[in-house]
Image (cartoon, rainbow, N blue to C red):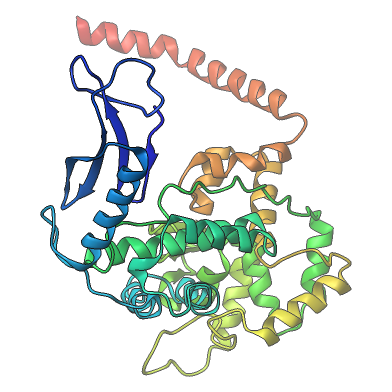
Length: 382
């Protein structure tokens, strides 16, 4: 059904026979004049807007101005606030809920991208067309993934503004996110992974080893505390993760040996603040630390490798070793199984044969236990 829409209402016709709403291009008999459906004050209000489409359009524009300045149709006046002010209030609000890394990224995005794009504008004056122009401008210079993040954060700012009464509606709502192409990570065999570890500077080598042996995310590694590491039981616990769910990761022999060395050289326990495992490295991926990793990747002849790819390598190693995808998802802390299915192509070529062999062993073991189990049930029945 086609209707003349605005950010908060639509222009329609009414059918002559029963008065029901019909689109503007309805070919049957309609009642005289045009009508508007206004969404305000938590409900909907119908009004006759004029005898012509132009009059209806002007009426709708006038209602929008009235909604901004006065209390009409059950709404209250909105406070005229600059977008910059509302955006800064949003950042102060999410600081309590976001991780430090996510919060820093959102601060950079809001202050360096969104605020300059709507500089000097009141948040109530920004409409869908303004958001569309912003998206088109960003499309000329950034990738799809970056545009999607921009739009998501912009929509979050407007959602909070609507909730607090700074504007009537979220103009970023309804703009679809473009599908992002999954980045194919460069796979390195086990020998190449060892070569990368050997080329790392001694200050970041333990970090790289634990990343390859546990699959922890960068932020999870840098926030990891000794209280979450159990060397006796050979496991560590990720308490704060991207999915907000804690998980336990068993330690390989290489990970255990590396953590034992770090524990010996631990030094004094801090009286204030977290007792981090990688205390020698800043709790963010700083420029110096990043440069050391880039130097190591070039020396190991894998210049396209990112630090996050170490997590992918851990998952690929698990799949190549024959670990079921469900177990891989649990170890990585994925929210959905679909996130882990991208590693399925690393399954060994004889995965089907291994599965059938495992099935045969299971049936053989179950078959050998059948007579005694049946006898036991018979005796119990007697």
